Length: 69
Image (cartoon, rainbow, N blue to C red; front, side, top):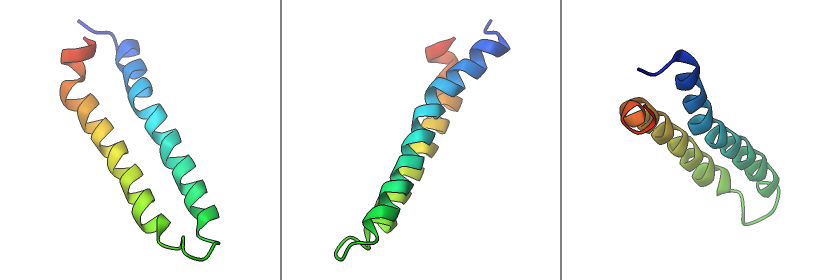
């Protein structure tokens, strides 16, 4: 049986890097939006980062006990 601490750790290991990826993507998109020809980057890159975060959360929720436990 998995402990609560182990469960929280696996959530942090799974979602932490994806959340950092989302934050960096938003920052880079804001910077690139200032330059001509790059205004569409936020409309493509940020939703992709959000999708990766959601996929990571679903992956951890659905298969976390099988893989981590």
